[in-house]
Amino acid sequence: MRPDDLQTFIAVLEAAGELSRVRCPVDPELEVAAIINAICKGGSRGQALLFERVIGSRIPLAANLFGSRARLAMALGVGELSVLAEKIAVGITATGAKDAALALESLVNSAQHEAVYIDNAPCFARDVSACGLDALPALKSWPGDGGRYLTLGQVFTCHPDTLLDNCGMYRVQLLSRDRALLRCHPGSGGAEHLAAWHARNEAMPVAVALGGPPIMTWLAGMALPGGVTESSFAGYLSGCRLPMGRCQNSRLAVPATAEIVIEGRIFPGEEHLEGPFGNHTGHYAPASPAPVIRVDSVSMREAAIYPCTLVGPPPMENIHLAQLTESILLPLLQFDHPWINDLYMPPESIFHRAAMIAVAGDCCLSLEEISQTLWATPLLKNARLLVLLDRDVPLSDQNQVYWRVINSGEWPLPQRIDGHKAVLDARSPAGSRRVEPAAEIEKKIHRRWPEYGLNDML
Image 1 (cartoon, helix red, strand yellow):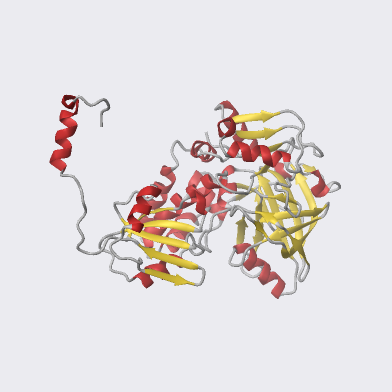
Image 2: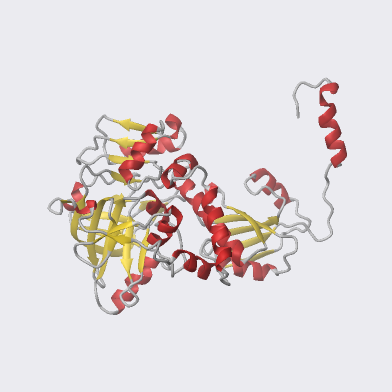
């Protein structure tokens, strides 16, 4: 069963024994986040959480919903997450396109996958603009945070000229009932749209959706090629067109089954200090100016639930979302660059900061060519560290990776450093011979093991 909205997803998790309800009153300032942090670090089996009584709000709060591969599979309605990557790999090959971006556009941008727009979308059932952002149980998560944040919002914008939509996951700090701050990093779709609107000296419409189809929450954090919309990609992966509802104050559209929708505008030159923000790096992102969202309206569906995620030192829920993104984008990387045999991003690197890459033995590109190629990809463009390894290295085994790196035939390792980014080449030197047991002897001792009188089987 594929859940098409947050409330259905929560019901699926509860039926599977994956959800814990917290029924006592809890404080959204630090207390809720401390509970989530303890759960993410291994407490209470890492359960998804539903806080039923958050002090200062009538809205329940859900957290850690995507905190395991099993729950992600439930969210996307598949038995195994690997089937999605396989679907993409087969699909893009069948298009006959020359590069992955064009192949994905060809695959996804068809009428059968486009969003369908409906009237009377459930997400607009209740107008709570009188209370505005004060109605939300948004968290202050860490003692040094500059305020309360929305951390799992899908931020919808569009380009003023092309009208191409974008959905991104950017942090939003709440200032008051009708003002918030939007932190879009340079190079993101939201930042590009904001610059285009302000170049025309016009306010940019923005809508923040919370909840809706779980697949859209995940896709909001993925860097897709420019010609692919998140809603169409969701339709392709799920096999079902995504219902969307037009916003009340702009041409923007949001998932019709979203729990909460915030609509507003960002005027040119209007900024306010945002942060500090407790980040996944283990340090606070320092306070700096960010664009102000003037909130025009806040709407909710009936019996709305507020979803959030805790950002902070790993392990956290975002690790599982990052690993799914990695597996989905790997076929696109390999389509353009067949010499990439495999890729692994350690959980501690949080999304895009480091990657171990298995390179085919017949790859004849120079280190400079490899590094330029990898840093040009959406998945690895911000990676601080790339480590190139032989195809037989188990990339997720940190002991093996370290052993190969420190014992590489050449030392210091061949490397390329570009500003704050580095590539290390830990592949075996050409012509080197590996120390390995003889295959026939391995078979023999497995066969004769019981005769040796040793306790444990191999």
